[in-house]
Every structure is written in C-alpha cells, then in structure tokens.
Length: 398
Image (cartoon, rainbow, N blue to C red; front, side, top):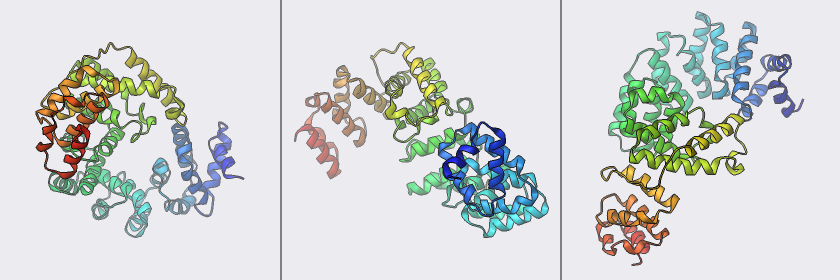
C-alpha cells in the first residue's frame, strides 16, 4: 500500500477501514507506520487527529504495549495522547517503574512522553527527573516537565525561571524561562509574564505560547484592559508572517475584536483599523488562504464582516506617554496613507520623544508620504550610535 493510500485509509469516513488501518500501526513490528502518521500530521484535520487518537487508545491491548514503547522514540505533539493515554490505560506499579527507567535512560523524545505521563500519575519518585529535565533545550520535554511540576505544586524551578526573566541579560535564556513559566499553567503567573514579555525581542513567540494555552475569557478576567489591547497588538502585527492564520478561530480573535470595539480608546481604534485592513486583504485571497482549513477560511470571512460592520473613522490619536500606542498610530498612518498626521509625527521626532527605533520608523513613514521636509535635520545630533546617525542622515538628505 502506498503512503498516500495508507493516510487516506486512516482518515477515511469508513470507520471500520480507519480502525483496521490503526490496528496495522499497533501490530507493526517497528515504528515506521507510526512515523508515517506523524510525518503527515500537518495534512490531517484536527477533528480527524482527535478521532485517530481516541480510536488508537481504545484499540490498544496490554500485549501491544511494547510497540507503544517503540513508537515513543518518535515525538509528535499532535499524537502525544496516543503514547501517553495508552500507558495510562494500563498504568500500574510495574508500568510506572518501566516508564521511570525510560525517563532516566531514554531519548529526549521518550523523556517528553514520560514527563507527560507523570503529570497524570503523580508519583513523587519522578520529581528528581522532572526537575532535571525542566531546563532541557528540547521544548516538548521542558514544557511537559513544567506542567507535571505544577501538578505536584512544586515551584522550585518556577522560581528559578522567574529569577532568570527578571535578571538575565541573555534574550535566549529569558525566552526559555518564559516557555517554562507559561507551560507551568498557573494563570496567576501570567501577570508576571506580561510585565516582562512586551520588552522582549521574542515577544511574538511568548504571546503565541500564551494564546495556545489560555482562552480569551481567562485572560480578560486576570489582565488589565491595556494588557489585552497589547496582546492583540502583537497578534495582529504578527499575522501572517509569524503566526499561522489557522490560529484565528482557536485563539478567539473575534472576541478580542469585540472587546476592543467596546473599549473606545484611541489605541483600540488604531488596532481595529489595522485589523480591518489586514483581514480585508486576507479574506478570499488565495495567497493567504490556499492551504487553510475550511473552518479558518470561514472564520476569516466572519472577522472581516465583523470589522466592516464597525464605524471607524480615520481621525486617530495616541497617548504621548506610551510608545507602543504611537507605534500603532504610525502603522495606521502608513497603511491608510494619512497625510494629515505627518505634522504630528514630525513634531514627535523633532522633540525627540521616543527611542531611535521609533524615530527611524517615523522618518521612513514621513519620507514615504513625501513629508520628510517636516523633520529638522539637526535631530541627527540627538543620536550617538554611528549607524543610527547614518540612517537618519540619509533619510533627511544630509
């Protein structure tokens, strides 16, 4: 049977055919068929993945457990439940001892499954291993250890990670700490995350991890309105280059949009205008939608209709004390080519109100709108970095 036909049978509407194909995987003597399933994960719709996982665990028998251990050499987050729930189905002291041994001596992929197992089987003998691998560079292992430690209510590593976020100068080390803290899944720690995330260069990565785990209502109940606005700011700015458009429904983007519309702040208005412009471009455009699932395409259409139902004029403003609001103001000015805002932007630049990154962006937008003459050329003297001076000097015609 060809690989294509194998996946076709596995996802077939004929449930018996699908189950027979699952049994082929279960009874195989190596992990090649399981690997084939994992390798094709991105082409299988979520509801079919769920069906496969459920049926797989129902069909697994105790005498097939050795095969599950063989499959555990291959890690796939979409089919993690196949491995872990098969173990849990037959969990007893002997099996737990075997998994603990695998946790100590197995591959990083196997250790990731073991950590997830011990988030369900709270055996304290696993604590040393969970703490040992909580700092792993293999993300599934680290995050599964984090969640398991939270189940044990052991905050030792959590405190270490918060210390890293607060004091480290290494952006990659800080990102790793954020990944652990979010995966620990204590919603009370989310405030701490957002107090530090927005100034981190990996902010989009941090926010996406957050949105994967927490729904809109959970975040709204614990965060300030401005933090919700900023989450949406990062999210809309990250579509489609950084974030997959298939996330729009799962991340409940419509709920954020409705929230922003009811806020009636200058910042929320700017964000809605940016979203309106983007989703108008996404909607029905094959460049963005050709590989999206049906539900995501429909959701993009619904979001576009929702945004078009709002009355949003182009008379926009920002809070002078909040650089991120000025950044949104700049983005709207650029996207809608709002010449009437150029003097206000130039005033901010000439008064040296913001950092060099925003100053450069402001001047670039003014130049694009044929208004760079509004910038006082002497502002180049406000900057000490040679490269910044050169960039600004070139933009203003020095």
